[in-house]
Length: 262
Ligand SMILES: Nc1ncnc2c1ncn2[C@@H]1O[C@H](COP(=O)(O)OP(=O)(O)O)[C@@H](O)[C@H]1O
Ligand SMILES: [Mg+2]
Image 1 (cartoon, rainbow, N blue to C red):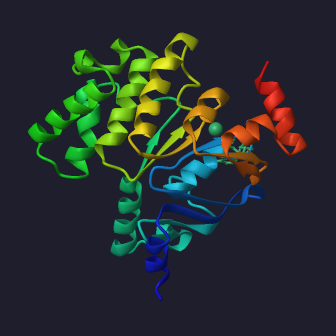
Image 2 (image 1 turned 45 degrees about the vertical axis):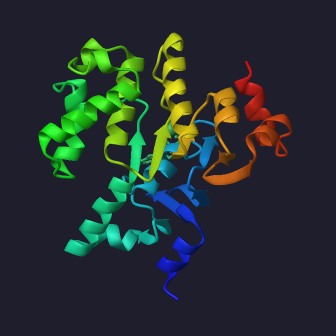
């Protein structure tokens, strides 16, 4: 049987298998595997430099893994696809990036575009949606993240929390199968963190499949179905978030959590 069909049968939206990443002679990821079923919310925690961002970036091939595969919707992607210049490979890569949405710590909005224009840009340019329909959908998405009143504001006229909610609406506009969040609240003033976490909690309740790198341990505990602790490019410990937090087995996780509590 074709391995692609197998992946569909197991019911996983996303599967990462033994992802490795080396930069020159530095081994940043040393074989990380993970499976997400539809509606799973997986939180990734770990010290700075443990490879969390690199791992997320490998999942949509923003960073080309040195080894391993990413399977999404039954399609398996590996480094050789991304490095090939064939039309089919490029098409496959575009498809992967469309299926895996990403929200960055630093929002990455276009400064010269309004909130609505930022949200419509992908649908119009990549999905070839007519601008009028795309704008109407953008306004709906902005309403969903509580920003109906801000559709025609530019990023510089918005708070960090508002900008991040625009970035979430922008990711949703592409109808991704999986949403990746890389420390979405780390760049925010403390009083703005809650509004972004509230939007993410709503998305989780809607059954969105999400992977979240975060230092907000209480949020991760409440929202995620599974927690993974990364250390030096490997999964050190994983399981139900409450178990990991209440009774961490590895000394490293115990130390990490103790540091987070201060
Ligand atoms: N483009 C790169 N070139 C060289 N080293 C990198 C690159 N990107 C990340 N690294 C290294 O990989 C390690 C993991 O980084 P990162 O994935 O950003 O960790 P985290 O997000 O957990 O803080 C760090 O040691 C970092 O310096
Ligand atoms: Mg990071």
